[in-house]
Amino acid sequence: MSYPLITADALRGLIERQAPLRLLDCRARLGDPEAGRALWRQGHLPGSQHLDLDRDLAAAPGEGGRHPLPSRDAFAASLQRLGIGPEATLVVYDDMGGQLAAARAWWMLARWAGHPAVRLLDGGLAAWQAAGGDLEIEVESGAEGEAPPAQPSDWTPSFDDGAWVTAAQLQAESPRLVDARSEARFRGEEEPIDPVAGHIPGARCHPSAANLTAEGRFRPAEALARALPEAQVAYCGSGVTACHNILAYAVAGRPLPRLYAGSWSDWIRDPGRPIER
Image (cartoon, rainbow, N blue to C red; front, side, top):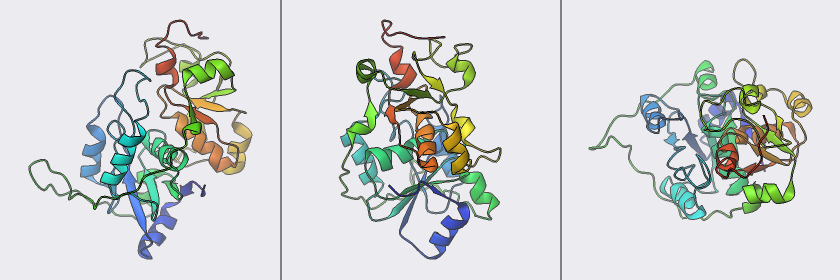
């Protein structure tokens, strides 16, 4: 797996050299499935395509939690529709330091689907603009205002289902867990999203926000290596920000935890599963 981050300056250099690149805008807003696409239309990195959290990076809520993984066939179809294959470097970005959908896209593409070259734009959209990068505004075409479709690809990823675990595996294996939610949610002091508060017994809390500097860029590898706890499985509320922690382990050069894809929203679906507060 290649180094997972790219700076805005390095990305501009690749673009100027006309290196084979595909840029994927992963902006999203929880609770508003149309927001990411709308943000992309309002302004995005030139040539980027929108990779949607709810449509491309997750299946419908229900069995498996709020953002269960899509089926392998469904995700492969999304990648083929966007014309994505293994021949180009993929650069994913969002406007939240990667904490929402960009890290999820990195994990799904690099770790699960096995794409050989996936990088997350460190600092995201703000870093691109701070480096002098322009934004492209999507000009509506056709009745639905969609951009011209990409030339489809025929890439069939080699999925590694060993990269993620189910609740049954957690109960059978009792691995070391790291929780990416805030300390208050972890302790059960507040729970703004899910109907039950608390955490999975034995987990340690490392909020995904702790991976970033005040400017929204990843902390140095040495600092992350010291801060990240020993963990074999990462989880969060619904399997999205947990991917940011997995990415932090990759930046730090530490072994990558597996993802509990359903995370807390899946764990609490069974009232017989233990919780801690």
